[in-house]
Figure 1 (cartoon, chains in turn green, yellow, cyan, purple):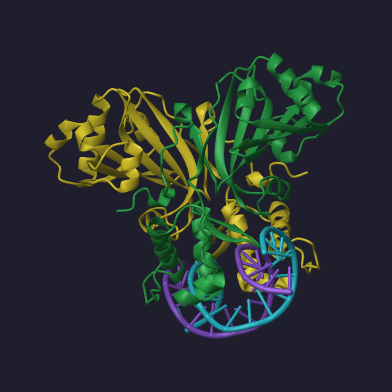
Figure 2 (cartoon, helix red, strand yellow):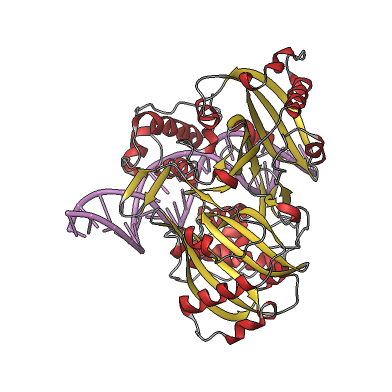
Amino acid sequence: MGTTRLETVPEPKYWHLRNVLAEALDTEFAVGEILPNERELAARFGVARATLRQALEQLELEGRLQRRRGVGTTVAPPRVGVDVSTPRHEWPGDDQDDAASWRPRDCVLAPAPAAVLRLLETGPAEVHTVRRVRITHGQTVAAELIYVPDASVPELSAIDAPSGPARARSVLRELQRLGLDGQDRAVELGSARADDAKELDRLPGAPVLVVTTRYVVAGRVAAVSVATYRADTCRLTFGDSGDLEISDRDGPQERRAS
Amino acid sequence: MGTTRLETVPEPKYWHLRNVLAEALDTEFAVGEILPNERELAARFGVARATLRQALEQLELEGRLQRRRGVGTTVAPPRVGVDVSTPRHEWPGDDQDDAASWRPRDCVLAPAPAAVLRLLETGPAEVHTVRRVRITHGQTVAAELIYVPDASVPELSAIDAPSGPARARSVLRELQRLGLDGQDRAVELGSARADDAKELDRLPGAPVLVVTTRYVVAGRVAAVSVATYRADTCRLTFGDSGDLEISDRDGPQERRAS
DNA sequence: TAGTGGTCTAGACCACAAA
DNA sequence: TTGTGGTCTAGACCACTAT
């Protein structure tokens, strides 16, 4: 990595710095390699540490760097492709989901948060809230909450297990019994809330891709799920390309680099 | 909005501040309303401006605030749902895309960038690069580059227009003639490159959702497109829920607020 | 020209992980 | 204990918008 001093440029220093570092990552570093520490890098480029950090933040957002407090900054492996496509008529929690490495965590019965009510398109209601996480390549890539109105599945009240993974599994199993007419789905950027952040081994506010799914039965929203994927390490894939594993080492921003 | 001073808390100040502000946005502000300026807010909460800005950045990332240099910080409208679902066998650039407000900008013939070659799964090749933008509700929400290897569609060399929207349209029209066996798609987080940023009216490095699509003909990747959506203002939707417009005012992080 | 957000600095201290 | 990244401060100046 050069020691090029940043000259007067028309673009912000941190952006120029990002480009210089991105170039260096491509040509001079291997995946997993540790970069010099921030103070060292800042000195080397003749900028304040805060400015250097702004550049690193960009690269981390793009999934090219991984920073861990107390450890250091390393070159991140390519983002892992996570298949989020689903057959139109399948509830979560079936065998296929087991294959995708979803692990039930817990389930509680409680009043639905206001935002969930809007998604459900109903008035106030009690919902079974199933919490589960998804693990790929030994890493927790997503945390999901599935909200099932008590009214949608009366059979749920017969479940024995008071809480914990056992109950979560029971609830999901019960869902399988229902028909499913369809689902619709949305993806947007969000920031990890404290509990999700902990589950995903990130700091609160970390960027996440939020996948919201509404499960429709008989023209009504019978359940809603909100899945939170680590944006730094995941690429959400749809369709059969699931694990084609295109060997792309380059954030999306570099896809079109000349 | 209260004038509550931040006390010693176990969580970072900027995160606590984010939560306080988010609460205030929900209860005391209307969409479009202008917040006090950053220096004023920082003073009011007794923090440095940089810390206040960290909180604002979070909220902007979540699509709840909009900041414009020289103007101020305003409460953002709910994210607009943008339908990115596509029939399995349709090329971009057809009538449906016109309805979705795609506007061809330009088209040039040039060697493909390395990253595109990896997506195309071929060796070095000349590609027709179509640039177009998508406009919804009067706002440019996405910029897309479509890469078509010259070899995929020999007929393209017969096109008259040397460049500009006319040529772009011609190339897209020519694609319609081809069959299309399928496509696969991925969504990931990226940061806007300088040219996209300009097109999207954002600063370089702004967070974007990158939708990568590979068009498959006869088992081979015949073309690739990389679409860059504004992450702050867009929610990507799949399936029939396209414009259901769930009245959700709340970033995804708040979807599960107790 | 005045006022806004955007960039940048040079420090300080804290939280965490590994030795 | 040492070294790392994470947080925070109190300034300064710049780029842009509206008046």
